[in-house]
Structures are given as C-alpha cells and as structure tokens.
Amino acid sequence: MLKLSSSTKLLMPTEHKRLIEELKNLGFNEYKAKVFLSLCKGGLMTAAEIAKDAKIIRGSIYDILKSFVEKGYCNEIDTNRVLQYQVIDPDVIIDKIERDYKDEYNNKLSQLKNTFKEVKSIYTTQIPAEDKYINIELIRGFNKHRVSKYREFLLSAEEEICGMYHIKGIISEDSAEVANEFINKGGEIRSIYSFNLDFQVEKNGKVEDARKDDFIKVIYQFEKMGEAVRISELNIPNMTIVDRQNVFISSTDKGVPKQFQADLIMRRSEFAKNMYDLFNYYWNDSMTIDESKKKENL
Image 1 (cartoon, rainbow, N blue to C red):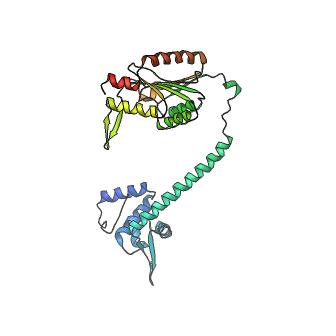
Image 2 (cartoon, helix red, strand yellow):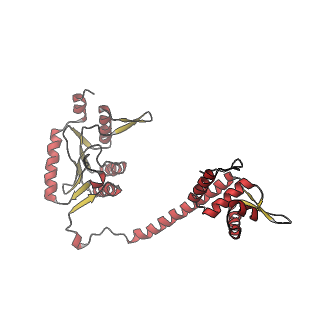
Image 3 (cartoon, rainbow, N blue to C red):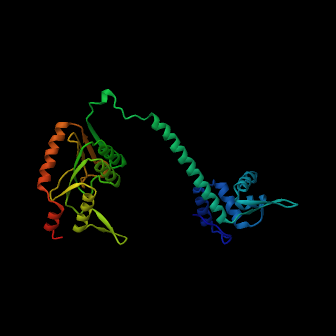
C-alpha cells in the first residue's frame, strides 16, 4: 500500500513519476495524482499554488480539489482572503480508500449472487431428446472445467464407484467430499492406487518430496473414509467406472504439455463392462495396505 507522509517533501523526478504511476494504479488519474502529491508536500496551499506546483492547468484544479474535499482527502479552509487546502493524514486516507474498496467489492458480490439466483431459476439439467445419444465427451486442456466435470461424473453414481488412480490424478478435496457423502448414503467405492512418489507433503512447515511411508499414510486416509483400497505396483491408468455403465479416463502424461492433455467420458455400457473387467484384473493382482507395507519393509 502506498504511504505518504510529511517526510516526502522533496522528491527526485524519477521518484515523483513512480508515485504518480502508483497512484494511477490505485484509481487516481494523472491530474489527481499530481494534485495529491502537491498537497502532501505543501502544507496549507491555495488553489493557484497547488496548480503551479503540480504543473497543471489552473482551470482544472477546482473540480479536483472539490472532489478531494468531498472524499475527505483534504480540508478546505476559508480565510478572509482566499480559500486554502490542507491534506488529511495519509493513514486516514488509506482507511477511507480501503473502505471504498470493500464497499465496492461487497456491492459487486451482492450483485453477482442476486444475478445468479435468477440465472439458477432458469437453469435446467434436462437433456434434449436429440442429445440423449451423445455418449462420448472429450474435455481438453488443464483447467477447472476438468475438475468440475469429474465432480459431476461422481455425483451421477448411484451404487458403485470403481477407480484406478495415480496420486497426481484428478483427486481433489472436493471430489473426496463427494466420495465421502456417497459412502454415507450406502454407496460402495473400490479404489486401486499406483505405488508412486510423484507428489509432495508438508512437514514442519516445509514442503518435501514424498517418501514411501507418506504414500501409505495417504492411502490409509482413503481407507478411513470408507473406501476399499488396494495398492498396485503396475502403471495403471487413471480411470473411474460408475455403476458399471460410464467411464471417466484422465490423461496425465508427463511428456504432454498441460494445455494438450484431455479427459474422456464414455457412456457406453459394453465399454464400461470391459473396463470393469480390467479393473477387477488389477484388483486381484494388487496388494492390501498391510501387504504393501510388509513388502516395502515399512
């Protein structure tokens, strides 16, 4: 935050220009920024003195000073000869500007909520008849849309979710909450996690590369939430199968730039059945947490 004080009376030309640019970034135009700096370093000044110091046209000074008085940036002092102006303590001005920012933000937030309340009233999830046969979706790019699509996919589950994951796959706190809610409603989740250390953990305020015991701790957390879990040493795909009907496949190839990665949703029961058989093959070939710990000497 820009802070000016009485110690800012003598400014080098470069510093003066920099302060003008900073004030412009805060919402001042160039003339207002120049007038404000002149007031800050000048004490009691007349309009003519301010215009001369700020090097601006005298005719434009009065509207600026009037707006500063109205905003509470300076005092207007009426003497028996001429009007004089004195800037308010910059700390007080900062508080005023901060309150203005907050009021503007709250007004926009209120407008956003009210507008989208109306938008929600016309929103529909009903699928047009001609679109019911669209059963393949390709989601391109590395962005929040992919995460929201995955969440939407999980929410469509009614009985069972079977997944194969790398820890770096699409597994977010949001999707974990959806999974937890699904389990609480009686749904069944079975998950296979590829044993890998391609993630980091925070320890004692520092971010460190994960170790084998960190991986096991993470999988324990999923099990505590109610998932049936297995650990695989194979390079399994990132895939989720819902109700043995629909499949979500996530691509996270390290050699492919994020903007070119893509996810695939397949709503085809035959394909889903094939992927469910593949899931069971990996499931039977995988280890429990205790078996994995024993194998890794943990």
